[in-house]
Length: 79
Length: 133
Image 1 (cartoon, rainbow over the protein chains, first blue to last red):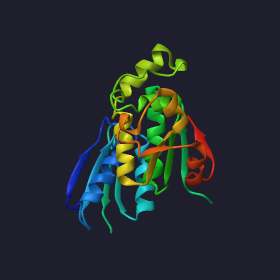
Image 2 (spheres, rainbow over the protein chains, first blue to last red; image 1 turned 60 degrees about the vertical axis):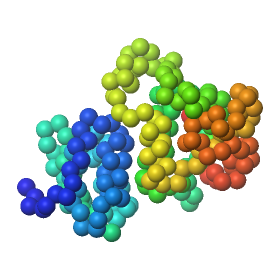
Image 3 (cartoon, rainbow over the protein chains, first blue to last red; image 1 turned 120 degrees about the vertical axis):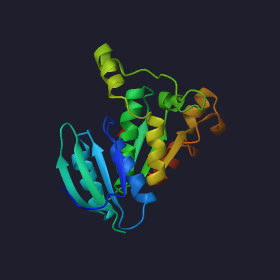
Image 4 (tube, one colour; image 1 turned 45 degrees about the vertical axis):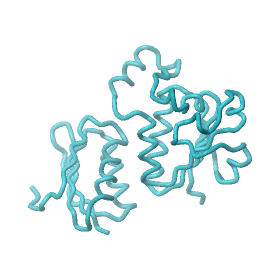
């Protein structure tokens, strides 16, 4: 388990592609550098989309965990 | 390599418009410019007073496919396009020939549509291959 302070949690479970990614992008844009955002997604596309977008946009993927029926991503706004 | 995405939307059914909106949003998220050209039935679906109405699904969906799309839920394709425009560069232009065919003015269309232009005008901005939906 992570000991990071989660600044914001996005529960995007049940939302189809590209909803979870769009929600994350919105949260990153609204947030401050250093913010830690947790995203819960049951959309399997998120497993590739969220890491791909983070790499492209230059933010940090702190943690990915497969939970029961969804994936949990922990992300840090880096810039 | 050209990194823009040129989408020509012809079909006006909700499944195809949803697929196009998802492509546009993904490309915009990944930093690619997106140029969308609306023709025929796709243009008709962008009328301000009809955009949220039921536009049906492509015939190949059949009743099972239509039900599957319904179950998928999620946001309306117009909302996905709005988000795509918000996070990136997504230019949506109406084909002037189709506008003429329907007797439409730009004011009749949803504000998602940036304007209207002829096909050569579209290709002035949309260099690279075209995806036709």
